[in-house]
Image (cartoon, rainbow, N blue to C red; front, side):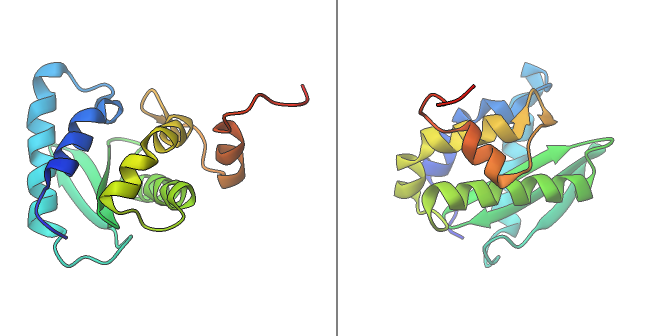
Amino acid sequence: MPEESSFQSRIAKGCTMGFHGVPAEERLHWRSFLVKLGADNLKGVKNEELLVACHKSVYIVYTVLGDVSIYVVGKEEYDELALSEVIFVITSAVKDVCGKPPSERLFLDKYGRICLCLDEIVWKGYLENTEKDRIKRLVRLKPPTEF
């Protein structure tokens, strides 16, 4: 895994949904912490190999998928086991959208569809959908034919 590129920096800054419930004054700390955590630990990690950390009573499960680092953070009922399920659903959705583990270019090309999937998986900081077929159905960009 290369050091954080400008691509990863842009994506990290753009993914504000990942900061749901975090006060604005703490967001920079968490972003910096996660970037350092990834830089220190993701080198040489295989695609979808899960790593777990704990910081300030908060669990972090993270992995790499192609050129993309994925972090899932939670506390209380969202412990490392629950977060492992969430990250599995996210990596599956990204692979479905991209057709394979994404390169930087492919991730950016599919960014809109990936965000739609993330919105269906996690809503206001809570796990909402984990079923692959349901997520695919919900992110279709066509109106439903039957009601």
